[in-house]
Image 1 (cartoon, rainbow, N blue to C red):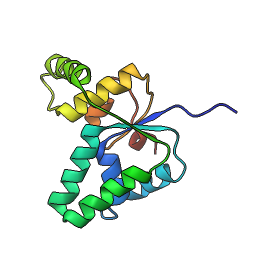
Image 2: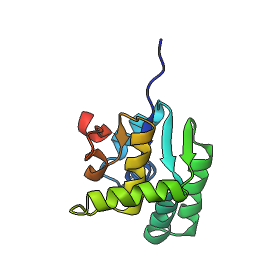
Image 3: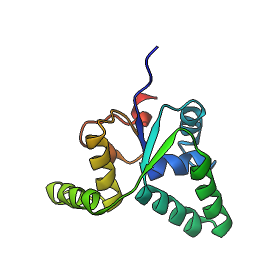
Length: 137
């Protein structure tokens, strides 16, 4: 039996999984229960930490980081100059969209790793043709 393809995990998927009050919690709880290899970026981790810090408190923000540290199979891609440069190219190409730098880096990572599914509730992550997990429910 072949291995399942990688899935890119955006901030919104981590939030939906970790926050029971999120509309998409049940969907992501199911997906994270038996995940393929997962890929995210350091920007997504930072964005998620900040979200829990602002929405809740330091304790919940640290719990989010602890969840990321133990999550398997998860690869966290470091964002350096090369990734940022490519992301800025995405931002310029899609300047008619309200993309964040985090979104643009995610689009770049999905393209370079040939990732075919995005775990996100943000429609921007599907704008290059990668299907989102919430669309396949």
